[in-house]
Image (cartoon, rainbow, N blue to C red; front, top):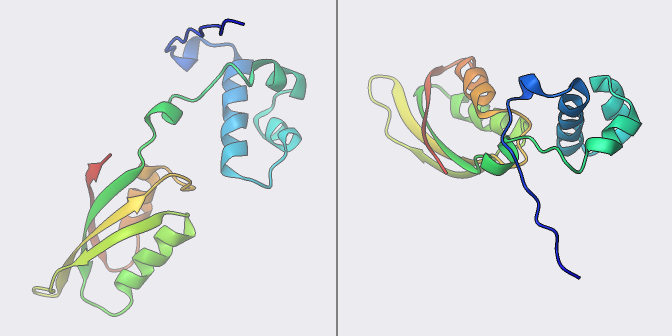
Length: 148
């Protein structure tokens, strides 16, 4: 039996029918939350289960093909007990896997820290991670310096 070649198109979601877009959203919810059922995901995005099953094998979010696996961040932290710990606890809370941590000797009350994080399975986008980390007390600056 010959295998059937599948053709894919890159299409702006704005021109797709609502059921296809909502199917992609439901699939994303199912991937992020193991305890969520298909029925619950469909209810959350406002799609019928029959529509979900009709499109589920044909729609894939673009980020699946281009998902960042490892990022490296540069941070400037106030030299105060617990600041680095708060940053690391936050990364762990969103299921980021810390691969490396490098901290320089603090100069004038500020420490330069670089952290490499595996982002696959993380419950936040990289942009949200950066934004939320910059809100942690004692974090002066957060910058994405590498991704691969």
